[in-house]
Length: 243
Image 1: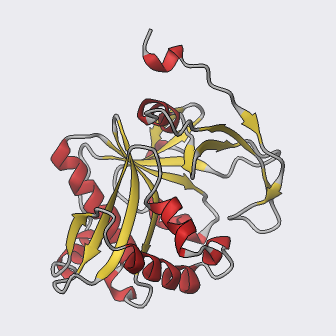
Image 2: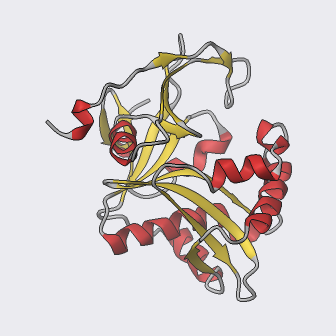
């Protein structure tokens, strides 16, 4: 019996609240709180593999009545191939560096985060975060994670992404980027850079969170090569699933 099976895990149900993605819908979650005093890597890895998503200090999966639109997604790194648009994106941004962040530019990250939220998610409650709340969310998690930054030759911050480090890869938790440089497609570039990192460390999966067919914000996830969806209790390539 491994350590995961020995743990007593208490799942709870949330109350219903307005859906973050589909107007007029309500959302309900099954969730488990993460113990800040423990190494949660195994728990997060196992739950992520079974369709859960981390938000702050808990893992959750939607259990909405009459709706199953949220479908867990991941990229299978094995046999992943760059599309022509992916190659153009990488070449266009060849002047940028992708590097690990070591929690030394909190103000820069916060300012970029605010600009991103204001331009891309103006109605999001995250726009109300002060710098302390942002640091607690982005930098001070007790879970095993890593932050990667996109910077130019002058070390200006153009993008950043927070990932959970799992046994079988990374789970993309949150990302933000310069909203005024749309020609660079920085959000897609962050994903492509993570795929390359996983190839280097020989890990098989990049988890992208939930995909919703009718959500404009989610469309980019299905456009990557070798995407899999957690559908009917197992991971399946997007090309063999009929919705």
